[in-house]
Length: 141
Image (cartoon, rainbow, N blue to C red; front, top):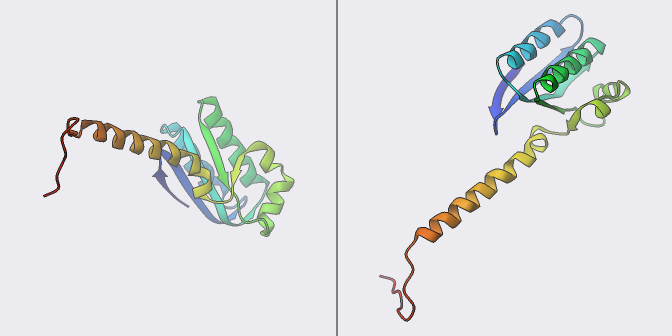
């Protein structure tokens, strides 16, 4: 398990098996992130080979913790052909979570405001650049 931050969201990447033997570490890490103040989280389980009901329960509990703090959780699932995704779909994962096919997809809507802000900054700078007065011509050196 690893984690980092992108666009102000904590991105947690989980790989391997999430079952009764290893779920405690995942639960502890996710709960600690939330109690430490994380309110926006993407959990990437696209590289999880196996996830049983205990792993699913940890994801649901994390979502509830975040929701109770007005936070959000987005989930990145394995590809549609992967057995783990099929199992999670039986649990109803797509009805419960905001699911995506990649971390980039999960964060795509967050890039738009950054581009808009950059465009606003460019417009602001353009307004500050002196323009030639009417009737005069600007010459290039």
